[in-house]
Image 1 (cartoon, one colour):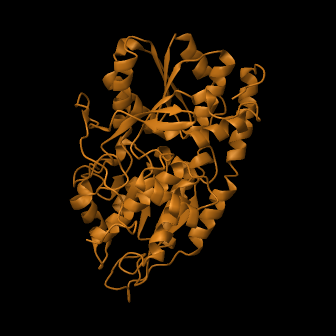
Image 2 (tube, helix red, strand yellow; image 1 turned 30 degrees about the horizontal axis):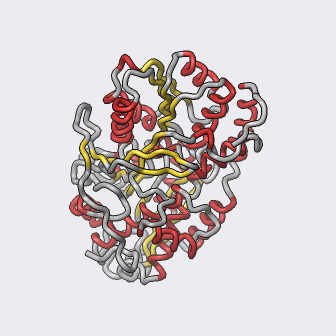
Length: 455
């Protein structure tokens, strides 16, 4: 990577504004995928539906809805997720669907704006009559619709966010997380910092919502308070991180922890570059996909930064196999599906996320049975979810009372522009002070068909 010339922080702010505006247009591949995914969706019916009695279900189809940032600050990378999920559903549909039903996903753009999220989710539930909301993306966005969905008894399945706020199955029986709780992720990253950078000054840059605060709680659980010399929140939608990065540098931090979405990972690193500050990076899995961040670095710098040199050596974590590990049979499966149904998108960690989450939804639908109701789906996840194995490196935490997703992750590092996992998966809980333990189970190979079995 070459960054020609020293740019001022003001310049970084200007080009960040340009990048955020560009993000508002979304990627062409994501928009195309979203449109094609939506075009095949089916309206609900309560009769002639093969024994099902729920809206959004017919004898031949199941229709879910989702809110996604196809535009706005979270669009880079994240706009690929739902189309990748629909690509996996298309693969399942081509093999007969689930109990003969085709799975359709209506994808609505909320631009990572909570007000928009409320509007589109109400449209999906009250006008499109979807069976449930699946993979709604974003902590600040999805928190605005959880009460509505639970009060309406609408399945709110596998939220695309690790917020601890999805986990309480007692108060929110219809909402389930999927990826690791951010506090779990923070604890695992924090333990690594304590073990490998003990005594060094640590700064934390975090999004000022339950995403960032959940991750910060995990870091604080493991890293001694005396080592954390600066904690700087930022608001989603801002076009500069100059005040935050300047404060972090001034604190003397040698380790920088980012709980950031990709565009703010990139803005933060370009700002650090202009300041001549090179801390050891520790970045949440949410904000580190190398293809996405590398593309943003190039866009924001108007081509002066290319590649992933500014995040090379960053410590992160993963709960799925690295998307570049082509020896892994799950990656082989998802690459096959990608080539057939989603080839216009890059095969990156966002696409892998969408397909892996979709695999879990198919598991849930298979377990819910042929005579599908909304409560059947909820019961299936509560009763069987903790035993499901698939592309994840660790088990799920699902039970009637705990609706959290994966129970841990494995430490990784960005090497030559790829995330390389090592050391073995670790599991823990979000409870302060709870143990972090190695996971000794093994990841199974996918079924020969690539589709989970019924029952």
